[in-house]
Length: 195
Image 1 (cartoon, rainbow, N blue to C red):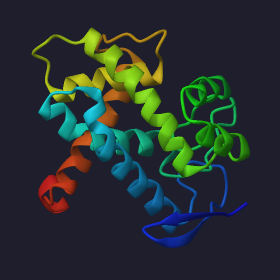
Image 2: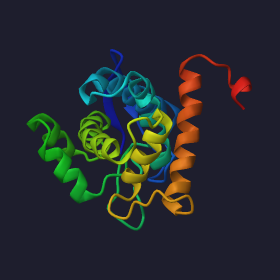
Image 3: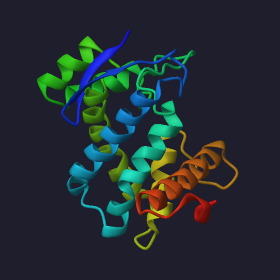
Image 4: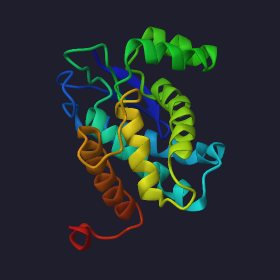
């Protein structure tokens, strides 16, 4: 079912061909990417991160968006209740929504795939996630290592193991590589210099 949203002063119709990650039309993916980038950038000050970590935060958010749904706000996991841009499970979505405004709770209740409401949920998730990552890395850890741990916690909070052979570590490496590519692209580095 298409969803109408306001984006940069224009009414945009968001659609997806299916619930599969990445199977959204290009406009929908663009809106999803742009809204995530802007929302995280505007709210990055709330996290008390070092300058290096704060500068990488939008790229981390976009890498996570790519990994979870391939920018499809309608994506749904076939074997669980995971849904939307960031693939929150029902219980997680409910817990995060309880920390948000009544307007966000109402939007999520009406449409769990709402792009803007999911950004508010993601912001709440980031607060918790980055605090936990901060407690698990050494003071001198690089921003890249910090976000590697943050993704590991996002992927599997209870069973997170930072050992080099763990499946979560391999997924975190994939996200970190994507994050670095996104960050360079955001700085204007031509892709042919990156690849």
